[in-house]
Length: 471
Image (cartoon, rainbow, N blue to C red; front, side, top):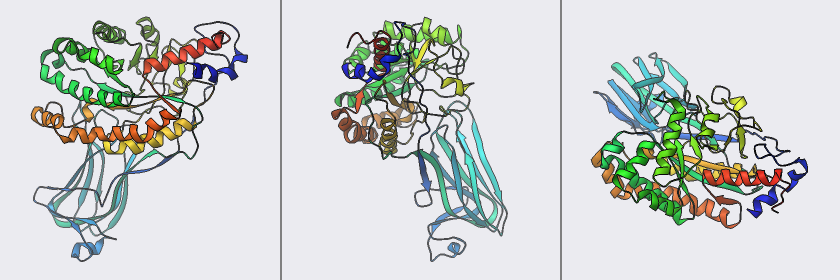
């Protein structure tokens, strides 16, 4: 706490007397745009194509006849009728481009589809190619609904051969900052669990997610870090049904908690969902004043009256995109300010009812990529930290992003019991070991939860408004 108060010293001259609801005088938002670099999700060397129908699918070399229409190998050659299909996962709310050069002697259609978790298969992009022409293409693709699974299919309706060269699926990620840390940042990791009535009815459904959370929480705790569970009330009440000591054990590990809701219409509305989620946590022995959700309706005054003082993990429910700019320092939101007006969302309201805590809007769906992505992101966050303020950051995970679908009982049990889970956990353990633990040791990073972050900000703000009498 002493370190945080010392950061506030340059602002004290701007304070004009105690006002517990006011934003400390002298604070000005400092939004910025991250430095980005290309992120190749898959290319012609790493793509694994599967046969569709009666087609023949080969990756050609320089000595094959099909390579004549390709550039440098490898080059995909598909002989129809039939086709070739590629499955991959992409991050939601991020612009991607599917590109390559295709030559065919029969009409070909390339289709990009998205398998949503709460809806039917959707076509994101499609292009038809004429025979006898070499065509370079770039198809823009973005996932704007729940789910990360993408399919790319080349379809040949008739006998013939198509070759695909220079294939890639590319997005963007934060680049590494060359600048040194400017001030300490309070850092956390959040994980979401969606509502499921079966948590209250089937112990095995609840237990599989609980086992995953146990493994993650224990790994973070071993580093002195804190996982924060942002769970719907059904999961929390399931713990009371199936394992009365489970939440107490997570509390002992230092795990944090948030109420997690959606904007969907429900009995009693969003305010009732907030109250229900917070009540479920409190009755189970987990206290929180942090909320994830409600960004479409933005009922922040009702949330404050329900005991919520901070918000985390913004996501536009209509587009799955995050905020257009970044700000590492928390700010107050005005009531009703949500995803419909992102410029207003980024402005602080000195009398706003809730505090927004910044973090990474993009959830990295490939565990092996997390250490690099998170390390480069954190380097920019530390470079933009302010020594006169409380600085915060977090990353968001999702319980359904680990292993096979949770309703595949046998496969999920094998994942939880086998080496695959340990391999996924190893990516996060490596990030903590190689990146954040050394930063904790030198004072650049403080492990925290959203409730702890908001508490640190309120203490800083109160000290400033009161002339820092506690110093």
